[in-house]
Length: 282
Image 1: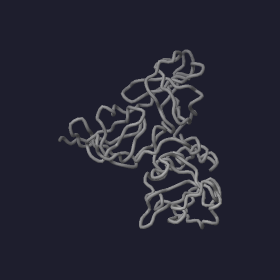
Image 2: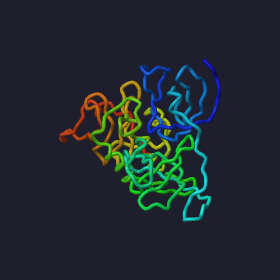
Image 3: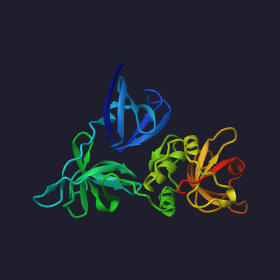
Image 4: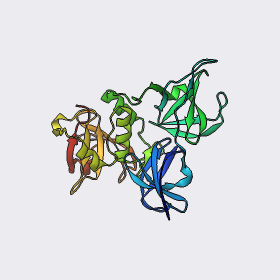
């Protein structure tokens, strides 16, 4: 093993972060394209990564040099130093190789943010990828942000709308994308798109949020934490009875359940182990 500490960025659409440098090791989280990584110890084909919200091991070939924001081509002969970012606002989109045809370089996922270098092509924008590469995104799949506020505050209805877009997607322990997602990953992702940066794991999210809510006062956007002896699960309220969550025991997918015993989607086990309800947007 060798030890270094260098800044990199995730160079694939979604990278697995594992507890140990082994493909069979526990998947602790995932990181999306262009996520910053402080790379430390190297073990064979693996690098120990420190992310903004987690640490673990990922394959070294999924890292590359971080993106340097450059000049944005906004006219035929004009290159202006604009800090434009394309933020993906669809659950899953294509990364195109060229401005016009549909050859793809891969797939990108909700909340990924990449600097724009060309806005002159109708229907697409050119973005910079880690490793000094470029690609093209459909304008319909992104929102364009200027400056540092790439995730502006949104209403809770917008946040729960992102969560609803994941209905039926598979549960994956440690997952953070359309390909598979866990309970706290869904909550963190949707609230990121709504302008709130919250921790990765359910117990961390609970401890991070100070505003506790009585169950009778639950409303859209509140987070419901579950557990018998410790917090083991989190869901997002849709109204005063229903909640959406990535559930990995009975459903193995993103589903809507209810606290109303008369509702067909009532989930007795979770109704009995509500730990706390916290409000993010106060």
